[in-house]
Amino acid sequence: MKQRWRKVGLALIFLAGQPAQTILAANPSIVAEQEEWTLATVPKLSVIGVSGNTHTVEIDTNNPSGTEMKIEKSGDPDFSVFDIVEDWTPHNDGDTFSLDLQDAETVYVRIKARNGKGLETLYSEPLTLIQAPAMPTLASQDSTDRSITLVVNPVQGAHVYKVKRSDWDEAKVFTDTTFTDDTVSPGRPYTYEFWAENSVMSNKNTITIWTKPAPPILKVQNVTATSITLKVDLNGNPDDVLIEAKRDGGNPVVNGTLIEETGLKENTEYTYEARVESSNHEYSEWVSKTLRTGRMPVTSDPDQEFDKAAEDIFSEVVYQVDANDKGAWVDVSVTNTRGMDVHGTVNGVTQLLSATPVRYGDLEWNKEYFLTVVVSDGTRRKEKQYLIKTPEKGASEEEAFRKEAAQLVQSINLVADGQLNSGKAWIDVEVPQTDFAVTANIEGVSQEITKKARFENLEDNTVYVVSFEVRNGKYSYRGQREITTPNRTAPEVVKISKSGGHLQIEVLTHSELKN
Image 1 (cartoon, rainbow, N blue to C red):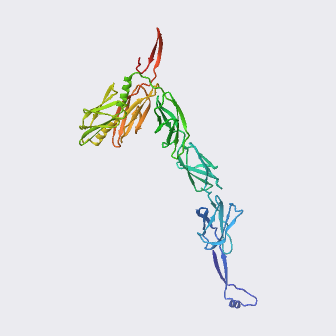
Image 2 (cartoon, rainbow, N blue to C red; image 1 turned 45 degrees about the vertical axis):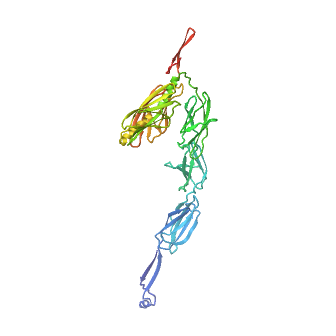
Image 3 (tube, rainbow, N blue to C red; image 1 turned 90 degrees about the vertical axis):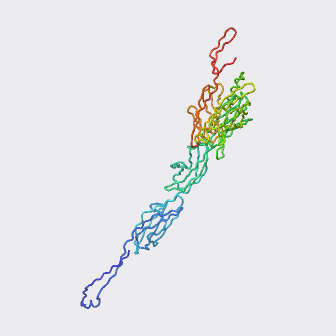
């Protein structure tokens, strides 16, 4: 920045009365030195780091080391009012200094330099430092089964507030301090991040809030003379909620999403209440539904009653065939004998059947046998035969599976019933304990059966084919069973006439009329 110039010159000066040689002798040479300074260049400022509220600024300059510089800061870009940060302090290229800002504060910083002669440069372009607002905190929260509301404490200098739910791609903006999310479902946790912004973003705050469980909806599943079954519509709640049910003086049982109670009085009104408990141990409101049981059907035909009971027992016969190196056998049981005597005969051996399986052993491999089941009430007797085939000795894995699956299909309990005078029926499908996966299909409607399932809204007096698929993860087997739904259509009087002293009534019915 400082340069020295040396000038050497010979001057001939003619003075009156002085010879030239005399002057030269006295001043053989004349030497003059003069110092001249170049102007310093304007430094530049840049931010190289922010830690909390501390901003670190670096000086960029090509001036010589130790050049004096003056640094000023202001809250206004025009520096109408300013403070001196450093007053003519020597600096080198790459020197840094730090400034601490308040939350949401904006500060403008400028710098200039001067050379050794005291000549100053212009000021640099102001560097803008912006401190983020403080992280907002939660003032309050509230939730319903369909909404969540967050209220944040106001933050100084915040232009907007933003919130982002964990499953959202984009954040939502709210300019006041209240945000409501009405895109939630009941009985679930939701996690939110929220923060404040001016032109920079504050630190993020995080909170998880649960929605309240929604009140369930009770629907009528089945009503008979002595039982009531309600279907619980979860009304948007997750499947893991717990269902509670109660009735004054009663003991309803919750089975999955069904509320069931038996042993009721006919033609009697009953009121049931239900609520759900979420995984957050919050409860919905109680909801109620009042229903009236029907009347017991009147029948004067014990033979018809016996036949129906026998068919129900036959549908609940369960058998399983197996074999080892010593021979084959079949295990047989009946899940409900209705209090009747039930005997089974295989290969000439007769045994009393009950819910506990009995074994018929000493059977040959790869041979067909008949299982004959006889139901008796002491007066009447009815029998049914089931064809059984034992597996081959050393049968392949797939063949053994298919035979076992075929036996499982035959052992599945099918029960058809319906609400009196409704014209509609249902079929219950109950699978015995098994490690196989079982799917049942009736007229295009499929259900995975883990224990028991019901197919509803079927026609009465109709033969239905129930298709089954049995899987073990490696092989699959398909089989079919048939079942007829009972008459549940009310008789229709089509004509009444009088003949002599008698009324003649013509009735249209699916059932056989008795005298």
